[in-house]
Structure formats: structure tokens, C-alpha cells
Image (cartoon, rainbow, N blue to C red):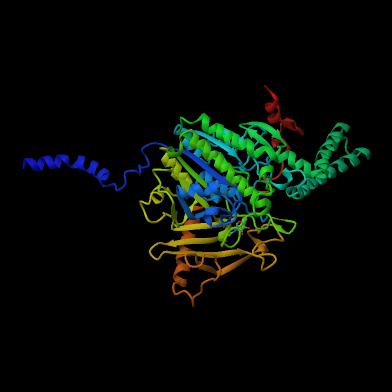
Length: 591
Ligand SMILES: *[C@@H]1O[C@H](CO)[C@@H](O)[C@H](O)[C@H]1NC(C)=O
């Protein structure tokens, strides 16, 4: 009886000790022992086929490859959208971008077009940075934002990174595009030109009306108002005329926190400034814990590349740019090592979406390569637009040299880092991401994702179903883009595939593939070739209905009205409209 009592007594202690004894490999610490630093590196427009460790034998990405060697490489890492603004909104909030209104109903205007526009990441969305900040992390963002700046006045900064959980911001609040580099063919300038012309026509019409009214004595209006109108008209006529340069002034600028440091920015030196900032952030915060989100401007066109990398790759300027990006990754990892933070830092590398197939220069491919996957940037459903590199490293906690083929999402970062930081994901809203730690640590064989929904703008184009018991990855396409020319594999005529209207084909029944057997989505299955065809389509349709019930209408951030240029919102270094400065050079020259 006595001995029995003792053993009962010991039971709790035994239960506590048991997992320790049982753990096969003591070198693997449990996550949760301490809160790691979190280093998130996101490339822009990088294709999964552009990276050495994803099978590219001719492009050199030794630093990214090393991360994979020392950590976990995901082969089915999926972005929530195939375009920057929605994909990044989903990344930061852990939710499909339709939930935050960061998707567009328009055929063309599918990202934020102006820094001086109204739309952006809504203030009631909670980013992982905000939660980690509340948990005592020092949070920094270096690089691209592209999620809006202000709402009502030039300086309310409602959408700015500092208002979304970052203590420190250095970077380009917009995105790189051709017009940012002098000597490139204008890209957005062409679109903007139409806007300026439209505004000018409206004002000119009003001017003409009042002027005629005044001259004929029909309505008594002061010459003052007429002069004002004339000035306003010229304000639009001049930028229309020199659209190219003005677009550069309005959107190509750099900020440190709320302060504009360069307007327009000198793109040639941005890469080295960004690396310097990242290294300095790591040095300043080595006592930790910190969150650093390094958001590349590489490898977006116009592929701004430093002299020393030009002509060094085997794939033209694009390859040079990818190799420079990898070098920058190396510099940041070097700083982590130098401060002795390698084993206490969770490092992540990914791309916001697939490579841009339609971008060409002088007839040659100028954008990324999505390997064996069909389609690319801008297409909601095809794998090439959304399947991206995804690598995690945390020595001692995550296994090394490991490949995981399970479906995972960029939205998974949200609950994963929040949990590691000791925080809780918000309970008052739907979070679409799943905590990845159990999968990455190989404590579970499968990811939590059963269904994934692939949107193009606000339109649902395709659905993925991971039928775990069969190991099948079904993908049903309800809508696919119409390629132009028809057999080109991309929309070269439109320059990017629109999501709706005459530019798409609707499929009923949907086109069905099993990605586990046909990852390139080459041969659609049919009732004749796939006995489960009807059952699979039915199950997926049910999942779509369930999903759609959870999507509630919210204000559209990228609506036409939000997405036009508003002079009173234009971030401006100087007195509007004379917006230019170069504090970076001034800093260099001051003692
Ligand atoms: C490697 O990347 C380059 C540049 O995008 C591409 O042209 C090439 O086809 C890729 N090679 C392989 C084997 O995927």
C-alpha cells in the first residue's frame, strides 16, 4: 500500500520527466524555451525557378542555398495573391486580402498606384509586427512597403509602417518601376499620362465656362477665381506634358520613419543603403528580441543593379540582379553571425509571388522564371504565379537540410511568429494562416491546410484541396486567363493578365489537376481519366460555399476613387509642388 502511494505521488513528476527522457535527440531544443529574433526576407517578383536550391543550375544563389542547407526548404509554399499589394497585405495580416479590402475588382488597377492615393492597409487590421511590438520586440521594416501612406491629409500617415507595428522604417514606401530609373522607357508614366490629361480636361472645361460667363457678363465671377483655375489647370498640364519625370518625383522616394530622405531617390545606391540599414538595425538590437522584415526592391524591373554585378551572371541583367540580391542576403546573414545570433534567430526567405513573364526588353525575357510551373505574376490561379521559394532556418530547433512538400502559405508566417513571440493571434477575426512550427519541426506529417483559395483580384479563380489520406493535391480552376497570343503562356498583349471580363475563360465543370502527379498543370483530368472526378469537384464546391460564407464585404481599398492621385496627399520633401531633396548626400557630406 505504502509503495503504491509513493508511486502515485511520483506520477506527476514522472510525467514531467518522461518527455525529457523520451526525446530522442537532445540537440534539438524545443521551441518556446526562449523567444527568437525573427528575420524575414522577402524578394520582389522572384520566380521559384531562379534559385539554385530550387533546381536552377546556372544562376548562382549560394547564400540562399546555404539557408536551405541549414534549414527547411518548402516546395509548395503558396502566396495568397500573384501581385505585390494583395500578397503583402495577406503576409502581414495572415488573412486573404479580400478580407481586408486589399484586392481589386478592376481589370487593370490591381495594386496601389500612387503614394498620393487614399487606399492602403486598413488601420483596423493587426499586423504580426504590431502584436510582436506589444510583446516587447523591437520591430523594423527595411525596404518596399506598397501598402499606402495617408488617408486624409499629407501627414496623417494612417497606412504607414510606423502605424502598423513597426518601430523603425527605412525604405521605399512605393515599389520600384521603370520610371524610377532615368533612361528607362516609361512604364507607369503612360498610365499616369491619361490621368493627368483627364484632370486637365475637366479643369480646362470649367475654366472655359467661367471665362465665357465672365466675358459675356452672364455670371459675375472674380478674375481671382479664374486665375486660380488657370493655375490649377497648368498644375495638371505640366505633369501631363512631362509625365515621365513627374511620376518619378511623386512615387520614387525613400523615407526614414516619417521623414523623406530622397525625392526622387537615386536608385543606384538604394541597395547598399538598405544593406547598411539592415546591418545597423541588427547591431543596435543584438540584445533582442527583434523582428526585422527586410523587404527587397530586387528583382523587380528595371533591375537596378550595382556596377560590380553587371555582366557577371549567365542570364543577362535579370541574372545579375538575382545574384546581387543573393549577395545582399549574404551580407545580412553575415551580420547575424557576427553578432552571434545565428542560433537564436529564426530566418525566413521567400518571394511575394512568382516571376513576371510579360516583362521583356528588346525582345528578350526581362523577368523571372517559374521553373516547371505554368503562368506567373498577375495570374491568380496558375501555379507559377503563386508557388514561391520558402526557406526557414533556426539551427538547433529546426532540422537542417530538410525538404517539406506539404502545402504551406505565406500567411502562415503570421501565427507562427506571433506564437514564437509569446503573443496571441486576434480572436475577433478569421486568420487564414496556420502555425508552421509543428510541421517544420517534423512533429506532424501534414500541414494544417486542407483547402486553399486562389484569387485574382476579388475573383476566385482556383481552389487547391490537399486530400491527405490519398496524398492527392487537387486543383480546380473555375476561371483561367486568356493568353495573348493564344499559345504564348502569358498575356503579352495586355502586359499582365486581367482577372475578369473578356480576358478570362470560365470553366464548368472546372479544369481539374492532381498536382502531385501533374505539377505543371498540363493535362486536365476528366470523368474518363479520373474515377473520383465528380466526387472531388463536389467536395471542392462545398468548400468554396463554406469559404464564401466567411468573406464579408469591406471597403475596397483599391477602388478607382482611392487609387487616383490626390495632390493634398502627395508625400513631399519641400513645399508642394516643389518636392525634391537629397538628405542622403547631405548626410554623407556632413561631419
Ligand atoms: C535559371 O534562371 C534563369 C533566369 O531566370 C532562367 O533563364 C533559366 O532557364 C533557369 N534555369 C533552370 C534550369 O531553371
